[in-house]
Image 1 (spheres, one colour):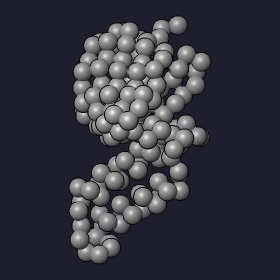
Image 2 (spheres, rainbow, N blue to C red):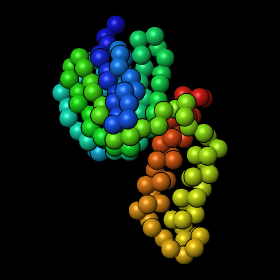
Image 3 (tube, one colour):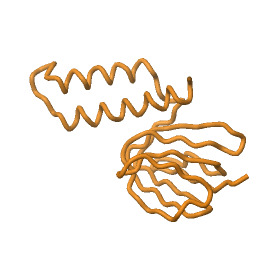
Image 4 (cartoon, rainbow, N blue to C red):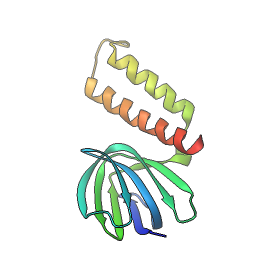
Amino acid sequence: MNTFELSIVTVETEIFSGVATKLFVTGIEGELEIRYGHAPLLTSLAPGPLWFEDVDGREEGLVVFGGMLEVQPKRTIILGDSAIQCEEMNEQAVKLAISQAEQSMSGGGDGKIDYTKAHSELMLALAQLRVIRKLRG
């Protein structure tokens, strides 16, 4: 089986260190799929979903809030600014955050619109919903 070493760390903690068969992550240029033997790569991560499959076929997921990705043929390292793991995500709270961000962007609320903040909140909430739906079915 073609596997690679995967390390996912943030400022707060080491999230995963082990062997994986594939990794999906959002770079600043778009979504990436990393497998054994991938060409070397160094890129910034965009806030978004991340999931990987371990050697037993189990998928784990999280949302990263930016960071860096380094890929070597047999080793991949993710240095995330911050992250939320799937088991910490609450689907109802995420749906509420999506609704509130959409309302803010449409001009609802107190009349003061910070589109950049509302857009960032919407993108992070949508990323969490993608991870929840992918891993919890």
